[in-house]
Image 1 (cartoon, rainbow, N blue to C red):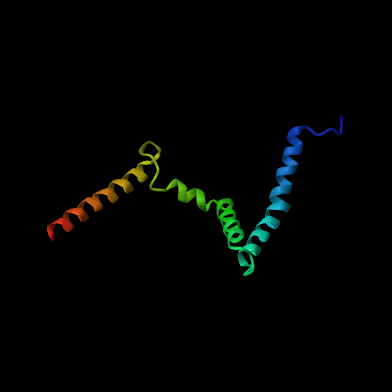
Image 2: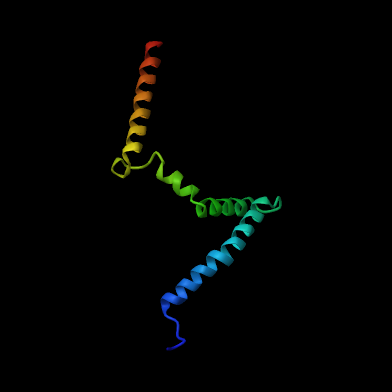
Length: 99
């Protein structure tokens, strides 16, 4: 039996280290930047964006965005879009009634 590590072993150790040791340190550093009143606005914006992206909040917003193509939408997304368009169409008709 050898003591040589495989690439898979090294990747597993690295991923564990990043999750357990590095990620919390990075998150605290990003929060500190956001809370620092002397931090440049660009640094605060970048830190906030990184925190939101890392926590999955920006992905969720992008998935539900209005620029999603119909073929990329779920049935629920399509129904929401249809309802919104019907509402806008009805609103347009009401606005015309009072002109």
